[in-house]
Amino acid sequence: MDKNEMVGFACYFAGQPSKTVKKYTQKLNSKNYKWISKKLRSENNAEKYMSVITLEKLTELEKYELTQTELNLIAEIKKSTELVSVCSGCTYFQKVELKDMFTDEMMTMASNWLNYNFKTDR
Image (cartoon, rainbow, N blue to C red; front, top):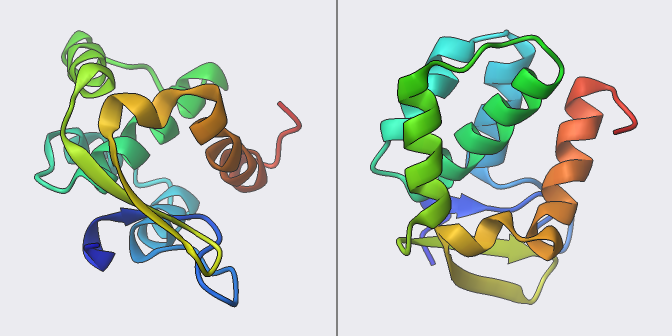
């Protein structure tokens, strides 16, 4: 497991977000949407995933308008078989294909993070 390329919203005993999730929380709070968009091309698959879910939520809330290039990159990421590390709690550590990160089951924790950071009930 690569801790620098890990998506986790409540990992380890203390239920802490992974480094990537913390970084995205900071960028979101500072409204640094350009940085988030640039990470759609990242070599880090956790950053690709976080960029997709963040930009899609921003678009849904009409706070951001996706360009055609961004839409194309998002479509590629959602079909990607590249692996991303995932953690939850003390014992759940796994590598998952990017395309499988967008299933309802996997999106549950992401939705909680998005709703908390956007202060929405959706």
